[in-house]
Image 1: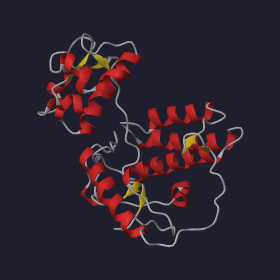
Image 2: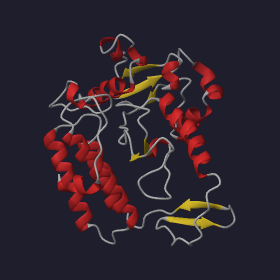
Image 3: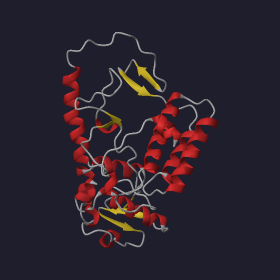
Image 4: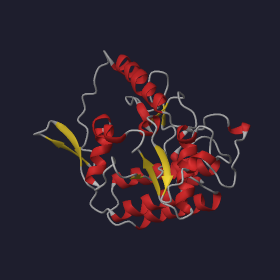
Length: 272
């Protein structure tokens, strides 16, 4: 997104700049429109690239060192070659419901950033809104917690997280069995991704339930993933319209009746 802001363009393998016919703002169109345009190119059998050569050139190496590093690791020279890209879905357009001080409904749990549903952003993920959530709610939560008596009970170790004494920080452990995780990712990408429909969402819910039931050595970490996937998928199925990052092929237009935030518990999602 930052590269597009600097003038980089999206092209397919034929060199066609396809955003010219998609939106008046071309590559600076809203995230959801750009993602769907990329998705449809790939669905039609094309490859999609971000071309920074003319707009940024060698400056990408110093102005965008992280991107340049990823390219280098992948064997791509962004100064002379276009960068292959693919659209991704922001699944959590909300998160855990909180009040104006970042408190959840669970006593002692505050939530901020993209894990929270504050009401500060709507149906599209915008970088400025995420920053607002982190900075404003981070400060509000810190002020709200400040002065409170800390919980003095030792918590059991959280599965999937270990403490590294040498580094003095928590580190995430790799899941023992990655196959169910890979299958879950594939289900979410194929059926709950950039474009959705009722048949695909219902199939996704069935496959997520089957993964939970059949996975060997189901861990709490994996159940966290399937719970999140179930909530996202059920929420997308219930919202019979398209709005921002949520696009339904079978309901392609916004419906004024859905112009509000919606809430769902895991129990309600499982019932669906």
